[in-house]
Image 1 (tube, rainbow, N blue to C red):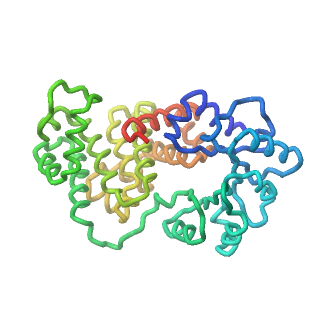
Image 2: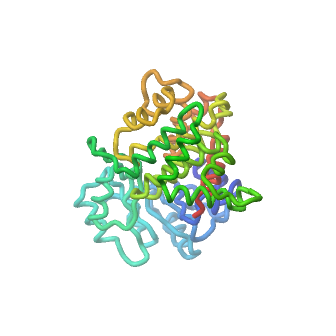
Image 3: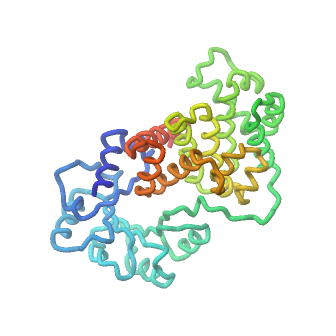
Amino acid sequence: MLASLHVLSESLLGFGLEALLGGKRGFVNFPRQLLVCDEFITLPKGSLVIEILESVVPDAEVVRACRRLRAEGRLLALDDVGPNTPTLALADFAHFLKVDFTTTSSEERKALVSRYRRPGRLLIAEKLETPQDFLCARREGFDQFQGYFFAKPVILARQEIPVSKFNRLRLLAEIQRPELDFKRIELLLKGEIGLCHRLLRYLNSARFGVRFRVSSIEQCLTLLGEEELRRWIALAVIPALAADKAGPLVETAVVRAELCELLAPQVGLETRRSELFLMGMFSLLDAVIGRPLEEILAEIGLADDICDALTAKPNSPRRLAQVYRLVTAYEKGDWPAVASTAGELGLTPDSISELYLEAVHRHRAVFPA
């Protein structure tokens, strides 16, 4: 109950749901105590879904609470549904049924879809871990999908990278150099018409605040400077590399990058802020490119200690590995791991929540919904 209250408090009172969700719906786990309580908070209708945990016993008090919430126009979901889950007794109140992909067979899932799918109710396949899981769930008739399947690579077994992606990887390699070669970067950018257009548009926007019209790539690079150029290229190139992938993949990479950078001064790595940003951005390159992460990182020349942290090498620097472990634990909602790793770094879970929300805010500023 305390974890759900913490999420609600942070999102509603601390940062605002719109900034956090970017126009999407948010699902919040409700244990029994929170479900039957109607006094502690006013929930926004439409944007927040009350997710009833599978451990909730659907007794008379719970049924009354669901009936009341449904009558008030609240959105309800049943979590971790299987063929014999007791909460299926509450299905008539639910707008969403989330079926656990890891504990059900294909036949069981098809039966659930056939029985419970109807107008006004969506079936969600959850805990999808691979692209194969996603394709299977689509074939079985699910409406929506949840899990880390989009962050799992489909390894191409040394398949050649298309020329356009190869050029963009060369740009990522260039921004790893201690001293940037602006002429070389200019030449590589000029081979990417879309990136050139985006760069010129960015420099000439009111957000950047240049008082004269920027008309050349050379001017753009001079105005940006080294650190901002590294950041801009990462933010522009990785979405371009992932153009044929699921949208959440890029969102996850950007939020990871922003959170890694925000954590840097908190853990004694202030001088490496830009490198930690790139650590977060590059952490999903295997899913973007479809090749092993260690192989890609070696090609683009990321610092050895950051490569070791991303690939969980036994000798990886403890501080960097802890930062990356903390970021991915928070992303997954693994609160025990968040509390443990935050403590190792001398931080509190509340401070991580604030930094995560700031990372989401930065992502929304760069990629508005």
